[in-house]
Length: 164
Image 1: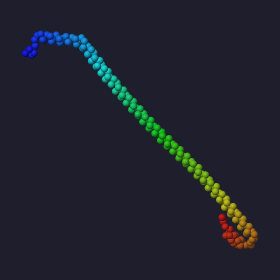
Image 2 (image 1 turned 180 degrees about the vertical axis):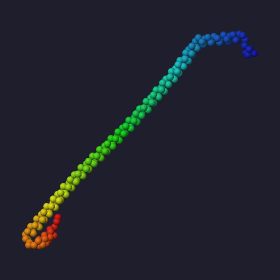
Image 3 (image 1 turned 90 degrees about the horizontal axis):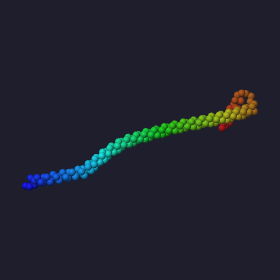
C-alpha cells in the first residue's frame, strides 16, 4: 500500500523536481516556444491577409477581364456593322452603275435604231423617186392622148416594176 498512499518524502521530492523542471522550462523553453507560436500565428495571419489580397486582386482581374471581353464584343459588333454597311454601299453603287450602263446602252441602241430607220426611210424615198421618174419618162415617151390611157399605162408599168 505504499504506492497508493505516498510518503511525505516522495511527495516532497516529486514536488521539488516538478518545480525544478517547471523553472527550467520557464527559463529556457517557454520563451522560445511562445516566441515560435507567436511567429507561427503571425505568419498564419500574414498568409490569410495575403490570401485575402490575392482574392481581391483576382476579383479585380476577373472584373477587368470581363470589361475587356465586353469591349472586344462591342468592337466585333461594330466591325461587323461597318462591314455590312460597306457591303450595302458597294451593292448600291454597283446597282447604280449597272443602271447607268444599261441606260447608256439603251440610249445608244435607240439612237442606232433611229439612225437605221431614217436611213431606211431615206432609201425608200429615193426608190420611190426613181420609180416615179421612170414612170414619168415612160409616160412622156408614149405621149398618150387621153388621161385614161395614161392611167392604164402607169398601172401596167407599176405592175411590171419589182420592188426590192
